[in-house]
Length: 504
Image (cartoon, rainbow, N blue to C red; front, side):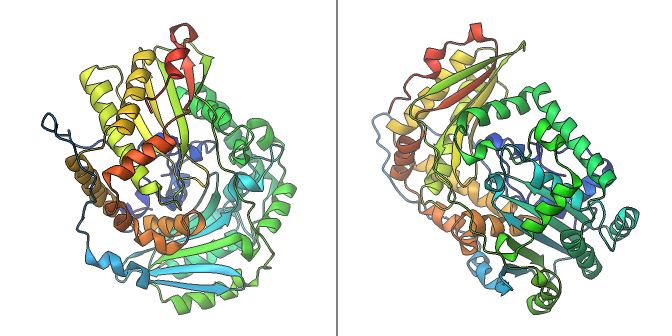
């Protein structure tokens, strides 16, 4: 789903994707999580901009790789990567405290002219059923329509005058209500944000309007191959798993949700044990603590403990073909992958990046079979990686993909490839951490899925410790039993190629 799109605060603060994580294929890491979110007016997009809190993982092609001399055997090695010394002190900038059971993380960035806050709700797909799928997404969207103290027109007028934005987003594991403002306007923006979170009115007319545009957007999913193949992939990969209940819902499930049901669901979710609050900006944590205690600190604690997520497991390679008259076949295949709390995620990131580069060279540059072949790694509690392509010759493209996976499993990567990949991450990781929104999202994702927020500052240390042997090991461990979905012409698909071995 497209990444959500504040004004010129600092400004890239809200013009980049960030607070929520995306899914399909790292395609510029604009995830499908916003599928179900309709097209919006300029003012709505301004509000949606703060969705930067959904963190971005990047897997991008690297420079062409150098061949090794004949007979040379690359040796496993770890690569030492220089990184800014200040990064090691990032954790010291974060204050962690508890307000009546609400965990709060405040990262102080002195001199920053913007502030970002995210109220994260735990659970994602585990909070819903097939019958009420989409209720949390609809609730979050409708919350910012009007509140007890800020009717609809007043809310929009005051946010626009300050250049502030309130937005929301949801993925399979958690959701967020987010705020972006300039530092001078933070106090009043915070008051509005707290009222949106705690005292939304859910007027029937507002709910109907928001619900209708979400339903229209969901119905549009089948119209675009890039969107529809994600729907098909989810059905295939998540059968029997909580993730099968799409947090965006279906047209049918969202159409049935009433304003009264939203009020009941909101009351259920507004317990401090279900929430995480993350704030990044030039703020005094102790002063902010008093404001949080006066608002969110009055919520009931509850006793929420998210149900454990079952691991995804694929027993064999499969391929499901959905007929559609298209000029090319759209193909995506997924395999189980380590989550961000697993030590294996770091060599897997390197493996996916190497694979992405090789697919680009072999499929696009050498054979011109596809404009944008992809290798990707998502960031979910139960995680997936995979490959995708749109091609007039899907059979040849998939054969190359499987051959390149087999090559990763069979041959240690070279010292140059390993060094180049990690150096690339050195650049993209820190560029991706420039904004307050990105840093808030990183803290939240690590806290909710990655074993604790402190791990957010250890990414490059752990990546730099990856060896060639690690990359080969995770390729062998995870890159098999691929579940393919194809959208296109069934007669042009040789299913034996798709379900063939990867050469382990």
